[in-house]
Image 1 (cartoon, rainbow, N blue to C red):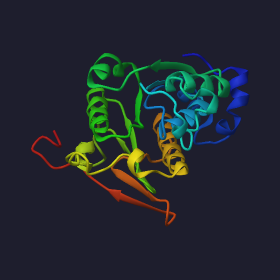
Image 2 (tube, one colour):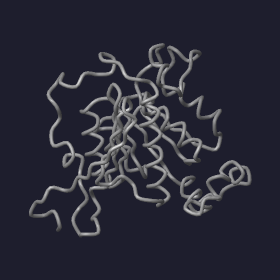
Image 3 (cartoon, rainbow, N blue to C red):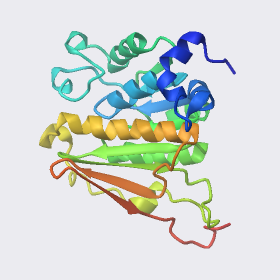
Length: 256
């Protein structure tokens, strides 16, 4: 375990002053290896805040290039990187923000094959994708690898965040819920249109992405109560947060 340097102690002083984080929590952040799916609307604030927080190894996968229409919400990129691979653009921004962070990039889409080959190397998975196929795939892969998953989604003016650790048991001895306990089936093709078709308010991705980064920090440092078994909903138009609880569906081997 590599200790915090004097430069890092000064950089993260506001974290270290917090009794809930302290030096131990900051060291945990430095030791953490986090994988992020996507360097887009949700991935951008996630990557920025986790890099600023001092995550030791930050990896992300994206096979897309920066386009002008991305810049309204994907704040890790800028006008000068239009046309570049998103992974390359994001890597440069992170390097400017915090040179202590080790960055690993994958210029490809997240897939079950990729997960089988690489996911066991990481401590936490964060899903910032924009489609249901990837969300279900990420949930299955994180459960198989027995690592926590922070997952979020946005619509036109609303978003949601939750945390999954379905391989662990709760205080009642029952296994914690899976993604399918929350969303049993994918919606029919075309029922939920993409933001390219309906639009999305740019700042919304910042709200949800920042919440996802906060949940990741809580999971890594053991601070507070992560959104396990709880789905946080945000309605930007009414400026309202709501939280709904969900549980594991009871089966014969649920408590086994």
